[in-house]
Length: 170
Image (tube, rainbow, N blue to C red; front, side):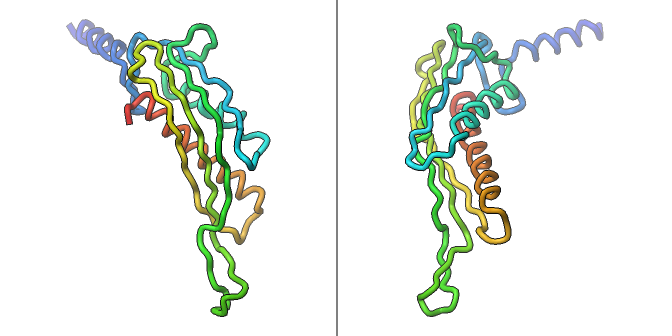
């Protein structure tokens, strides 16, 4: 009797399409393709396109049961990086004279236009821009490393937004 109950519970959970990540993927969806996200921003970081595309693929691989394929996929992600910008987030009058203003924080912003095509249920498809940013201190660190760390942080936010929009209906 215990074996039958255990088998029933295991069967019930294996048929379910919900993962602990919050994703709800239909059981009939088996494959996805992530096309290369070209960098069309005015300011270009050479590795951003490849890193972003791979980050989205890895999220799908690690948080779903979907296989990444180019052959007749059930879902397709495509798009481009349309904006990359670093600007002062705040301005501080260092000596209260209006001269020598500085910014203790930079704001790094990335915008991606994404198109998600659900070939099994076209009503779930979407195309929209997703923009996220991170503020970071400009003092006390290597500027190149701070930029790289914050690019990764913002790309993680955007890939999570895309994933949630496609698979968690957020």
